[in-house]
Image (cartoon, rainbow, N blue to C red; front, side, top):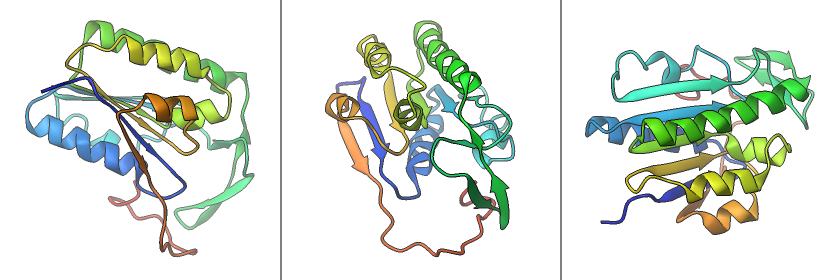
Length: 186
């Protein structure tokens, strides 16, 4: 069986990270090493972050985002029923994205996980925090037994073309005033 597949979850619907976490859970269930690297995320109150100690030594998660909500597009969102002002992107976000990508290179070299999840990397690319060529280069040097999952809206065509599996997630129905639910959305 061929290993080293690239999976891409993109689209404007909810569930891209959730899909990636489902693959991660399956891998951990078979005692395979999983490393999750989250771009633009910092929130330690998510289920995927809180579960890390329970799933050791097979599950690791690392976050590369500053401790505030950022966006290149919106200025305000509702999170947990509260309005949250979003910060504009800056050099700090670019530096964190570059550190995350460099960390991914090191993980592939040293840890050689069965599954590497690069969560929200598509959004980091869309917001020009990373160069798509650098990500393509990373995908060319995969260990033979490592699968990679790329998530986030606005996946560039170059990554869509490179991926072995591409899923576009779209909301068919989604309540406008829904409050995020612990254990479901985070």
